[in-house]
Image (cartoon, rainbow, N blue to C red; front, side, top):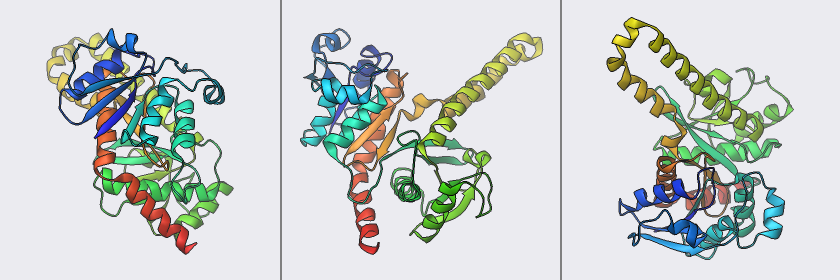
Length: 330
């Protein structure tokens, strides 16, 4: 198995990206291709490093650059070359922590979408008291139609079953009330389509259920999903800061600090994006992992593990089969 990694994408590239790839390579699980400026990569890569090769690409897409501009004017950028390795069959997956809009645009243009999929979606894994659940879309599509949300439900269900080992995943539609008639025109239309789809659809779920119980897959449009993702990151960071500040100000709590360190560390790990590494862009005809722009070495190593899991579980084949069946009955 070979995974292509955009070495130049991300706030801390290439240093942290290269470090994460080196750590992943040390596990001996497959071949890793670092795509980018060879001289910049070599500065941070111990040579020789078994299991890693460098694929040259001289251009870099900036984090705030227009995806349209990148597609038009940077054919030799690192993210494009990394995606091309998958398109040419020279890699089985691609990972990037760079400009997510440009990454998704290159993935759709070079790999295409799975027949029957209207729009690809970003599927993120979120922690719950009893395990994990999938939320999609987390930002690929800010404007959606009802059939797009139906597709998201199907893709999320397949992902939860094969990547998270959840049998018969429960699919919920994010809305402002649990009653079937609640929501806007989009969610009302999606409710009917999801209800009639070959899914374990449990109906509407409200915002508080995203982090508690009730379903294994949460479906929403990319605008709402991205707001939930960023809000949850900021909210957890703020709460953890308040807890740490309260401990430091209280003499009795400071005395208990050694006992509190381990449970607080477990809690931080549970909600830390670096533990999950990246999110699959479901619906494109290849395994593509969108990593956090602030990815460090640990986050990149986790993202590579996400890509490995998707390849090993034959995620693209499962999605292709499901949408072929959907197209045949529609």
